[in-house]
Length: 149
Ligand SMILES: [Zn+2]
Ligand SMILES: [Zn+2]
Image (cartoon, rainbow, N blue to C red):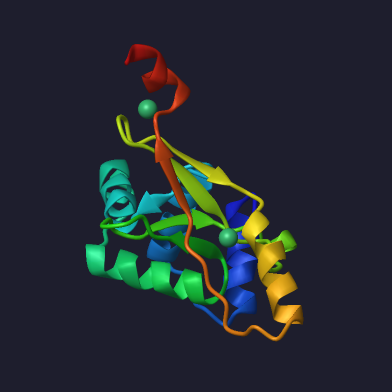
């Protein structure tokens, strides 16, 4: 997903109307490909751009729609609001989801693109295990904060 045009055709292919607010949310996500954002952060960025007028509830609704069509990935950190990041639709297979490292000092977030747990799950599935789920979050200090402390 590289451009707004791609997003427009994706919306159309999913029978979704191309609205200014949907595009605004998509633009923010495009500009933050490596940084998962909460719906509040996305809303604040839209407000700041002053180009669009929308409320927080519609941003949240758009995010759930995007999540449903696989356009974005949702992640949860313990005790925190969900964060969203564009998914790579081309390689959207079972390895497609991401986990994150979060710095406890500066809140820097780094996504990990390959999940090594998925292959373990598939191995278990072959042995008859079903409905497997996992949560993984890595927290600690990023290199910058590690230097200071
Ligand atoms: Zn840090
Ligand atoms: Zn995983």
